[in-house]
Amino acid sequence: MIYGKQDSFILINGYYHPSLYLFFQYITFLGDGLIYIPIALYCAVYNRKYLVAVIAGIIICTILTQFLKNVVFSNELRPISLEAKKIIIHKIDGLTIHREHSFPSGHTSTAFSMALLLAAIMKRKYWCIILPLIAFMVGYSRVYLSQHFVTDVFAGMTIGIITAYLSLLIYFSYLKRGEQKKKELTS
Image 1 (cartoon, rainbow, N blue to C red):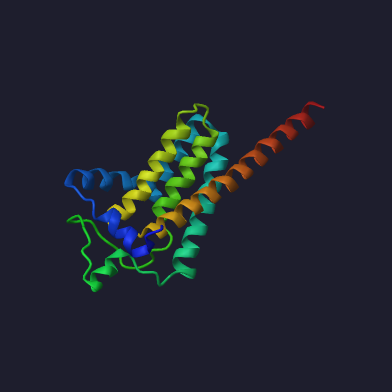
Image 2: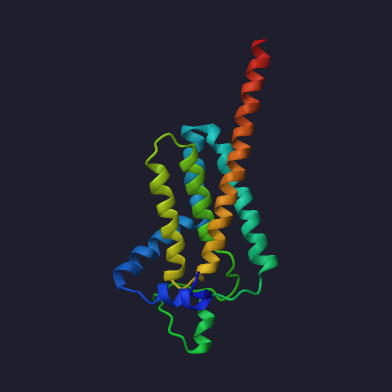
């Protein structure tokens, strides 16, 4: 962030290697909106009470990200626009690079919201390290693959954190109401 929008992008995008492209090309899919499907299915099959948190996360993250991306910052250009300034951008052959709707990064907000939410509600502590690390790699991949600026990714991280927090508030409120109903039925 201290380098600014353009220079921070050039710094990350400039360190390229074919094997890293392959890795980041696939890790970026963990921030795609389609990742909601296996997470929701997992919760529906193995622990339905988590489904409330996941659905809240999907709704909150989608509304926040899409409102900012398509209404507030609809004219924000993506890094491919730097080519007009004769700046070299490393791209993968066959990878579609979009031109508009850069801010914030939807992949990053999706990855962080689900990673933090799942890390908070899952029982095993190692997920508290692994899932946010994966989300960070998704965000990094967005810059590495010339899809977003670092500022876009940072905003996506912020949305993900806010989404996870709000979803957990809804989840714990849901659990509390369930406990109150049980007490009322037994009384």
